[in-house]
Amino acid sequence: MAFARRARRIAIAAGSLTALLAVAACGGSSETTPGGGASADAAYDQKGPITYVQGKDTSGNVPKLIAQWNSEHPDEKVTLQELPDNADQQRAQMLQNAQIKSDKMTVLSVDVVWTAEFAANQIVDELPADKFPTDDFLPATVNTAKYFNKLYAYPASSDGGLLYYRKDLLEKYDLQAPATWDELKSACDKIKQGENDSKLNCFAGQYNKYEGLTVNFAENVNSAGGVIVGEDGKANVNTPEAKAGLDRMVNWFKDGTIPKGAITWQEEQGRQAFQDGNLIFHRNWPYVYSLASKDDGSSKIVGKFDVAPLPGESGAGVSSLGGHNMAISKYAKNKGTATDFIKWWTSQDIQKSNVIATSAAPTRTALYTDADVTKKFAYMPILLKSIETAQPRPVAVKYGDVTLAIQDSAYGALQGQTTSDAALSELQTKLEGLIK
Image (cartoon, rainbow, N blue to C red; front, side, top):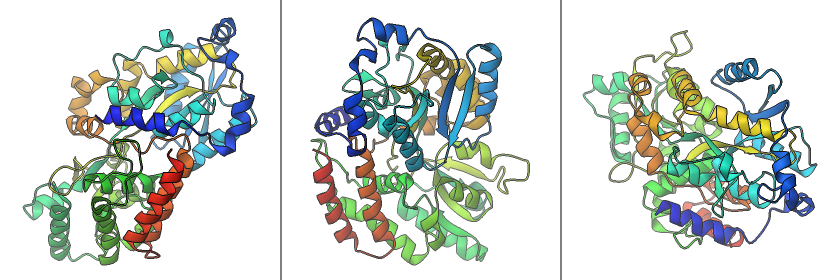
């Protein structure tokens, strides 16, 4: 059902183009689109050096993989271009590169929610179907790479939200991993009272005004039974269910369940707080597991934490579907090498080595039951369910405007600048104008 809802939302959203890229889109030539004739085939035969562009690598493993490729392909070397770790800033730089039709970016690591915008505005190529088979990938990840049922990117990494928790503290107070938000709050209160440690906080996710806030807002709304966009593709966020989700975030900031300072946190600030032993519970992505397990002194909770599904109202909650896909810039050179590099990077062997090194969520279905992977990361079944039951964020050609509207409304409520009712009413109006 999630896939069908997404397809409907794409169809409704596709009627308009992002204003920032209107000129670039109109100036693009269909002759370079794969499947469009001899010129397309020729473009995908060209080989040589390329540039791979992604957000900041927090794992330290990306340069190692690129070095491996370069040693095996000395005439087709890949240069890594790291962008900021902020998703909104990554997107902005990729859009700017497309505006000037620069060939400096070849392979783009794109957030799963950018596909419609990048495809509609001809920032990335439609990928040749015969060169990019998708049978062995998680269906949810393939769906994020398509626009009007055509493939514009290749699934490189997935993401499902997880609840990290201090296993040692829960065991000390004879508690189980919480299945609901109320259970989490009750466990926090008991542990904090027993520990009497002013530095120990209850829970946090990502609340700074950026894409992470859109994710956290969506998860709270969805886990309360609400939606941002309904099955009919129309905005439907001004509801009692959505209000319950937003109210929880607002109230937890007010009563200290979420520390006040978390209003500035993105993924890395929250991860650091959890690793420093200052959080009992933490919502974040799978990559945190590997970093929090390092025994080099950077983590104070090695062996003291575990993961569980995100909580909900009466049972397991709902994650926003995260992850990144690899796409080829419309204006790139050496698209033949770009094709080979993407297929190599997303191959089962390379994905397996990467997940073992970094705990990143793979897109190859078989890796979730691979003996070597599950031996190191026993939570793989939890992660797989998180991804399979995840809800996509709103799909829209004007996604940049959509996510900014969500961030504005949610952030205003969290800051106490407006009520939840007013925030959701305003957001409903904005989304009705953006998603048509």
